[in-house]
Image (tube, rainbow, N blue to C red; front, side):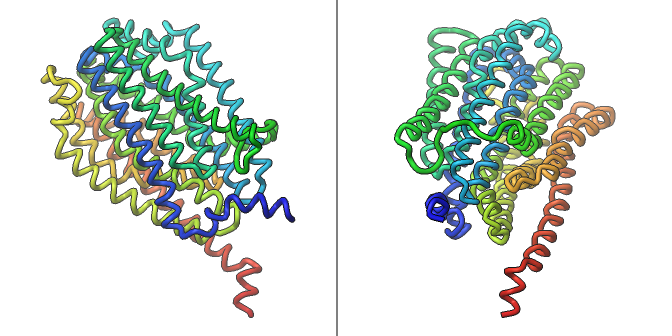
Length: 468
């Protein structure tokens, strides 16, 4: 029992501290980290738009389905793997958790390398298939071949950020991600405005920033392994195909969500290209940058609460899991309302930040932002709900939410709405999708809450206590 007690000792805070305090401690740094990441991506978009114009923004957005696949693989391994790690930590199985971490790192490097090889080998047909017109295809392809060699770093950055948080070092993880973002912003200015490297400079700046974060995280875990420190560290990979399959299944909803976003982005791009051309695609890019503000808050609440949810679930403390869920969804919905009103009121000013010298693009983007803003409060429910079910290893429920709001609902709406409301119908797809996604999420959360309450009431411990 001595070994078990020692392994549990490093994680008692997640199991015993007040839930509200734990969420502030973990979600706060995650929120700062992701907000900085979103702001740096927005600044990146502003620099590209101001220096290279709307066509460059369209070129980057056309490539988004490829980036979505990369992000999807990272999120699948990061969320699925780290949920497994956190459950093992909550159960006191620290050695197994270390083996899973090492396995996930190897998988991330391998998948990134495959993505690099495929993108470099098929860059020309790939950009054509994504719908790049003659005017933007060259920029799209240049961006792809510049960023592709760094795909493994992108994946590892996400995986290890979450792993460091599972190790109880949320502040350090935030510092590393913020530092990488600041490096990216600084290099954006140097490469675009000083060295005049064009869109390749923007791609290279992003790649170097992500590589910095991945390298620092790797050094952190390698150093812990050398010192044989307590907690998570790199060790001999363990688990084999059974664990790989479990990670893939548990992270499948996040993978599907990212892949679906790529497919939906492709469908949006094609619809907008047919209706109003590359200016519409550029406007859609601006909408995505603005909506990213909401997504990062909700993602931060999800990733920050994941160790709390997973470790308490692993320890059988479903009352604390339920308490954390209610807090996170309530905070997320409140943030969504504030953001929705703010984005609606400042739509024109936001558009001007990206393309100040293109009034037609500003008008299209401003109208789109005002419509899409109302999806933000609803998006909080769906995004947090999906991460919640992954955190407690209920992959099926998470997959239903991800498939609905990420693929099924938007594609149905996109096939119908533009025929009725033309361009405005395209923008209304986001609101309808998040409304349907929130409804499905609330139904599934209600079912889980009922099932967990009945399970707790019928447990031998509860019966014994009530009979005493």
